[in-house]
Length: 192
Image (cartoon, rainbow, N blue to C red):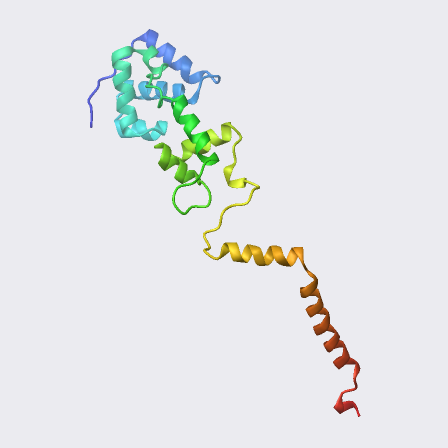
């Protein structure tokens, strides 16, 4: 990518570039570009210019080329770039917000960000941004989540039964406790 651009700087451009380098209120990138051109105008090799300015060789070539085409004003202006991606459609955003409120697919107990992203055809980060913007936290639902356990219904009935009728459990607990206390009050054969 080596380019041979002969930098010719007239007196007016040299004074402007020197003023840019000496201006302490200028941004670093403008000062660096002006120094590249001033050093190049002194016929220093590209590698020496790159070392002295802290830029790469391709950057030196780029700013030499820009100066040759546009002059000092080209150094002070960055090229414009295309804007980023377009925002998601309102229908997609609505779908992302509605999916966690419905039934999850398959055997899942709840919607995850990755599942919503796959169902909506967007990235996980897009789903997270939409949830954050709408203060939606489906992973922090305070309601009961379904279990995958096939014997879950029987287990729930047992637990609910214990809470609703704790007497049988307490009586068996008391009887074992009484047996232990009677044993501990009787003198042991070793003490006799």
